Amino acid sequence: MDRDALTALWERRWPGNEPVGYEIDQGGRDVWVRFHSLPESKRYPDDEHEYAILLERYNTVLDELFAGTEVYVMTPRWTGRSSVPRMRRDAKHWRTWLQADDPEPGFRTYCHVFVERRWWRRGCLDRLLRRVADDAEGGVIITDTGMRRLYHPYDGGADVFLTTTEERDRLKERHAAWLSLHPQGL
Image (cartoon, rainbow, N blue to C red; front, side, top):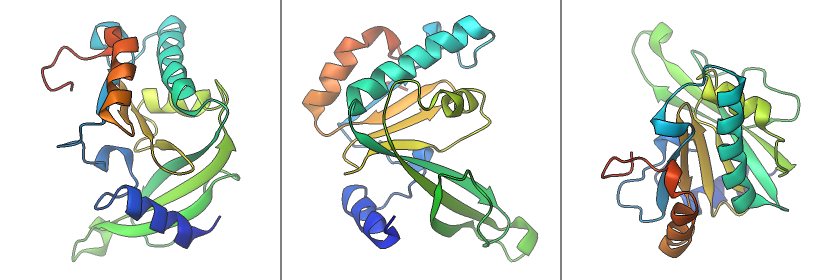
């Protein structure tokens, strides 16, 4: 993995945004849509039936975005030190930055982002997606290798950034039942 090339691509595609899902600015972006992962906007699954529903929703959209292609899976970790923490064997350290500065060293927070490149196939990230749904993992981004489309799953749903408003509208139409009733789509 060429860290510099990855950084240059990210900064070209998503200027002013750190590669952490919930930090991507959706304000003013007419290519963003949010889907809820459970009926009636329920946030957390209670049983295996509800996990099956949310995994079906996550995987359906991921298939539509990335079927037959390679993706980057970006996973952040936060620590109180600048040294890089351990991560899954296949994930490579990409970036670290001081996210919350404080004169007291014990209150500083560093964000470390790891990247894994893999072929997308339905279900290949189910374990990670379950951890996201349980709020045991956060800030994850799944993107094509050109970083044109971003998929940010979170506990309760997923934010999706597409290439055009037309592409966004087609995706919204196909999955209208998964949209929020909130006027701003939240």
